[in-house]
Length: 440
Image (cartoon, rainbow, N blue to C red; front, side):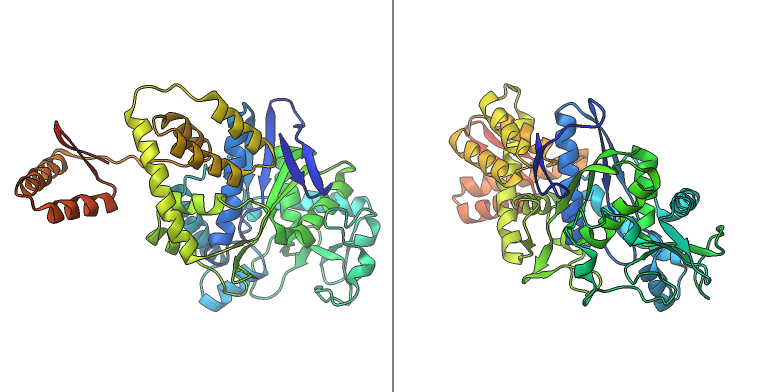
């Protein structure tokens, strides 16, 4: 299996640190606002990679964090007049609800920054001890970027190139404008924790270095996140972890392309986004999964209502195939299709080619729903479990009886309308010489 590695800037053969096991860290949300389709694109890609690795026989340890304290959350706290913990939990819960609907497997660990204050402090102490971080009179602690000679190896950026027009956090106590905070001194009205440098809270980047290595060790296999995190967030993670421990941090860096609206990145900071819960009120979760997987994960993707509606129609065809496979007994798989699927997924998780191949196979081999359904399940598509009771069954029997009477009286327009309306809500009628049957 090959994956594009941002660190090497090429598609590399994937070899895990430990045979048969894979450790993945997904950079999760900063929970100061609602989860949107851009977040979900990253998390769905992570879900598919995880599912495919498990299909190949790996034991996957999957970690996805929540940043539950930072400047934006504090600003939201002041704006809404509620506790910062309530801000974080409100949007964490919204994400978890959406992820469940989307059939995104739960992470093995969902660490939050505020649960790892001690580990963060210990990491900072090691950085100070090794001469990579320094304290200031006001109680801030900064990582000294110039001391880490490999700074920029992930993003390709050089310090000299950053001097003009870079966005930096101003502080006259910094040795270099590009040094970044690993610990922020307490300000009035902000939450704080006690540390050797006084009251304060962790900087953004340090939490991920501490939490990922806590669960996965160092080095670990795969670090994932949106392309917007390459610099400075992931660059700074590398600097902290490798400076503190003197060894490689991560082997593979997998970054997901932007979700855009008319060419502009979907973002909480600009307010230009579509909340995933709002989208799921209009569309089946499988439609959203198909919408996202029809583009290669590294390619920028434009949100389009028209494309989403077209995808909805495409999902209906796949849903019918999965239903037929569910009802059938013969589960012999087409080994050629399975092999093609594996070859395409092994080439940097090529889901667009995979999905295209499945659609072609369905058209060419209508007699075999089982192999496409088997592969769709690996990609995370699912049929929701629908429970019926005796009254529901009785109502359906009445509807079928009424429709049969309409057909007998040659009232075909009304009979077809009943069939079509039921089909829109997922109840399918099938007419045959033996009579009419219905399925969910």
